[in-house]
Image 1 (cartoon, rainbow, N blue to C red):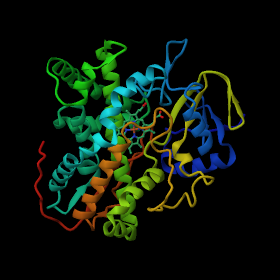
Image 2: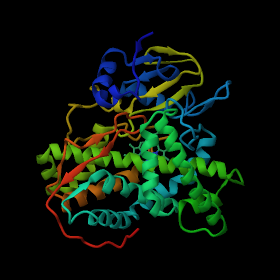
Image 3: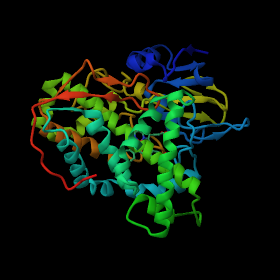
Length: 407
Ligand code: HEM
């Protein structure tokens, strides 16, 4: 067996994930680590693709004889998330309830709203010539859209964003994670109230749709509704914010590329895919083997935990030329940042739209922003999402434009 000290929750991984992934890919692409009760780390693009597509052998949710459970993260999170932590055939019943509101055509309709929210956020700081682009822009835009889409009050965006940040960047069982769990209770209170209100009087939002939907001829329990709604919150809020933060920080260091995007905004969609590949905001997720199998020549027993390192696959030299470079017009770019197989990200179209609108507005309204690199803070540990705590910038002050959105 090939062993490694790999731990995706360590500070060393948050700092040096590209180097650690590269060493594993070169030396032991299917490696075993003792971290978090022991699991296998897959680092090659092809092995990860094979596993993600074989949901029969590689399960996203298993209840273990000792009463514990496995899920999409290592270690398993405190709350089950549906449908990410669910296998077929049941999985399909739930995924199909969500697909409609996240299809390209449905998501397109959100663009004017997103433009208003982004304008509102930039208006709040544009006259001052300074801002923290994480707390003033990259966090609120995805959080506000996610809450609006669900039907939850957008005034609560900061609490939702702070709690989500804390949960996706800290280790389950750590004091920071426990504190964030306390915050979750407040959000769940709001979710419960909205479920009751929409049951009585539906509106045009996802929670209304879910409370009135039937699975196998029956309405869902509140517990199941919460497993779905919290996944949309955790999936929707911090992931895109992290991508925005990472890309804006990179564009500070690469002004010629920033000018190129400003001059040619049509390049933004291709550049978005490259930023997704290069920053891999969700570095990896997990599966559990349901039977004996072989991956990359390594025999695995039933009941083994397996970590699919999307961030390593995205730098696999066998698939990508010059993987360590950001190539804004890279094509094709079959990155794994949204996963692949049946659990492929439900919100990929939302994420792409949010990213494009925010980037367009930043390039238009804060074209000369400069990051205060001495005070910009990345998360010291990654856990599930790799992003920034703060990104202070200065820029030439501009005028407010006015927005149809207000909190
Ligand atoms: C840059 C932004 C994002 C990234 C990198 C990302 C990444 C991922 C990945 C890797 C998966 C696959 C999970 C697996 O295979 O186990 C996933 C699933 C999922 N994502 Fe995203 N995501 C992003 C944005 C969003 C947004 C904006 C939403 C919702 C508004 C969302 C909701 C979900 C949901 C519900 C699933 C579970 C799908 C299923 O199990 O069928 N994500 N995401």
